[in-house]
Length: 247
Image (cartoon, rainbow, N blue to C red; front, side, top):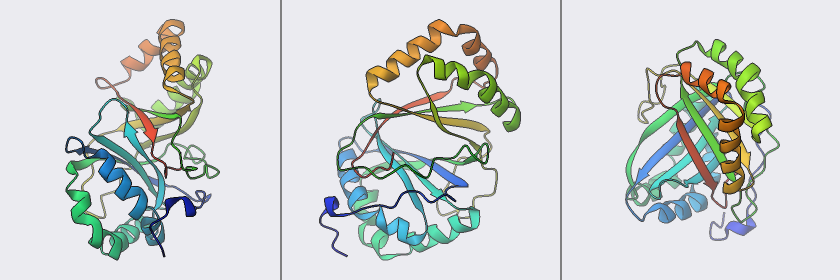
């Protein structure tokens, strides 16, 4: 296949079975190397991972860190994850381009292994690949929770999500920690943590800022209740999609 022209490619929408397992991957890059990695990733590592059995959900620039690259990869289940990762990392695309990719990275070990909190709370299958120009913003909140996953999910659905919706954020998907052992230890994941992660799409940075201000001003009791359920400060990501990103 000719890999020289991105605009001639199409990436299939996410199948309905995707994704029971999701990796949220946050990379620390050498200064000034993010665009190098994005160009390489979008050109060489989308179709090649799809062909190996992974589902590329999205890849992003972190708007608050010029040397951070964030991406999401999904699998039908843990067994499919093991097969897909073995096929890709032993395959020709990675072997050919791994040195160039690794040369951009300082650390690639910040990886959360997740599963949908509910059977219906994963990324919707109708989301499409990028149309050649990145736009919008994907916001992610990573909560380190005191409650059990089920208890916190109920709090999110009954209390937090309705307040967020009224403040201007519709939840796209939400996940909890996948506690299965890492079955591809060549790639480390963070272990020993219980997290709840949710995502929302915004039209712009301004729309996201307006939502944040509205949530704080209109729902202080909900914000306080959230804080009391967490182990320390949450991580919040503001992510701008690359041209090949689905989301």
